[in-house]
Image 1 (cartoon, rainbow over the protein chains, first blue to last red):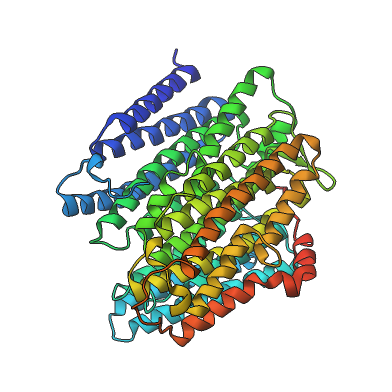
Image 2 (cartoon, helix red, strand yellow):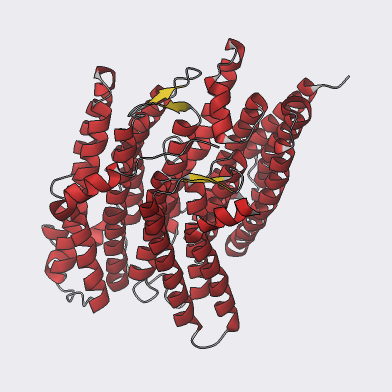
Length: 101
Length: 499
């Protein structure tokens, strides 16, 4: 029988993988994927809590909004990464290092 | 339907900004020769209308929940709206495409629509009363800011700044969202007042750890918005890479909205209103945590600012330090604390925008942001140097300037809380002394250091002179209106905490 705990474990695993991707990847697109994993771990939480705990639809509505915002954020992020690539011919974040101090 | 109509009547400042935003986008799309003048006029008009409507909202003293509890309207929220709209209006009025060398010749339509969108989302964030609205507004502020920082498309610095800002912001808000999802799971609701009722009802000890985790995660999001340590790393890079008018707006708008939402979240859902103060719900003792963050923030900001050579970077670190002082108002958890917060934010608005304005003007004429190019300005631009002196003294917190008023109120609110808080006030005072060093260093470079003897005097345009004088006069506000500011803010301390 699958219960709330299973969902929470999956979500915690997704969060950890997302943070791992964020910290270890050097390619900007991979880092963005890590961020997507973090957002989706929260979505799994929200939907699971809505289904098993709270007994209202608030969490599912929240998750839908999160998906929309994530799409908007990635659109802006990819535009900026594209500009980075145009200016430096690389999607590697380590190359972006003129601002320091 | 009645509820929506009633809500719309109390939603007028936001409606004015939304209409202005749509008209600016339309006018820009027309492509006629007059579009630049039109978009500037339209955005000024809608910001001025929003400011007037925010004032009338404040004067009416209206309070209540809007749109089924998504947003809230109350006098304290109206003060935040006034500060936020004023920030947008001052940036559009004073920082023009004429006097910003970076923006010169770029698309005015995009810039003005982004300023309006940022102001609108700041207003929404400042009055959010539901986790969904809070998250949506926070992301709207963030995404608009990322685009604004990246405004100089072919510029490597602007691009890099925006990328760092974005990755940092996405990670911080992702962490916050995870915290919000846990908070929803714990309390079963997304409404802040309902969460307060749930927490005030007491929770089992086993859930206590969850509440601490949630507070830390949510603090990541708020800390990112107000640039508090350890979520401040984006701030110097973003300010340095962004066009100066954008940096000026970002240093005020999102910070004010961030503090507004922090106040509402911690006072409104993690505390219960009492007489003259708020009481903790007993579930979590969060003020020590914020106190630590605030003390570290002001210290890190001030110490890092000591060695900066780039004016925008220096002002970025100074704004981090100021976030630390402003947070003292939240930590105090009292009406005096809330009042100190809004007085400080009002002061911060005029002193910080003024300093950024001087930096813009120097860049317009000399093409530099480096402090080492500032010597000789005393001779070449006496008015500019004198006015910069006013802003810097105000930032240090020396009477009779408005910055002093802000520091007086926050320190007063913290000391009032009792001996347990005194060390915190001492940390703040020591920091103010450190800050005095680097602010006076700028003044010393401008007035006393040799250099630039052969360069001609700066010929400032009339409008720029006028704005310099106006900003300086605003910094002298306590001389004329101290009692007015005192009673106006005292009368605005109603935080609506119902559903």
